[in-house]
Image (cartoon, rainbow, N blue to C red):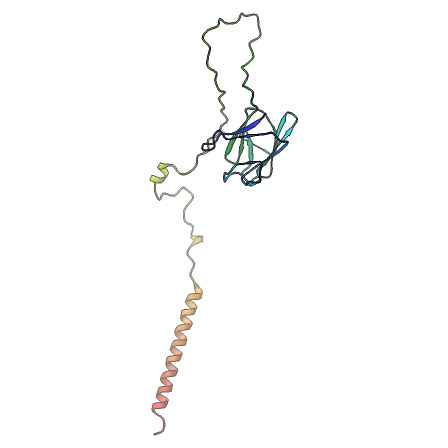
Length: 193
């Protein structure tokens, strides 16, 4: 039976058996195979079993579905290939051992048997390491800005004209009130006796 094996650190070895005809992969719980990672869309992809073929179909995910680092929308998967949903890498495993390369064709006699060599895992050179975060050297540089990040005069601080007008009108009203009080006070004090 074919299965998906997660390769990402922290989820390494987590597997999902492909034992039904239609499997959904995504971040939310209603998927057949839930991958709780922010780079995986809520309903990221669909895995269909069509006879002996395993077909992956991207469901218009935000971060894409990749097979051996090439973006795909629908493709037939083969055992040993690396599949990536967003930033989560998986390997397709059909449960069969990796077969040794075929013996050379020719009339030469087989080499004499020697000590058995240990089985070697195939090296996958297509694994993409995606750095996350900030390096220590970047932090040590402190406030240096990358080139092209210069301040632009088009984005200067704007003045608040409403507050300026409010203060001017307030001062004028205050002066008018003071003048009226003074006029009223002088009129009352100089009135008939």
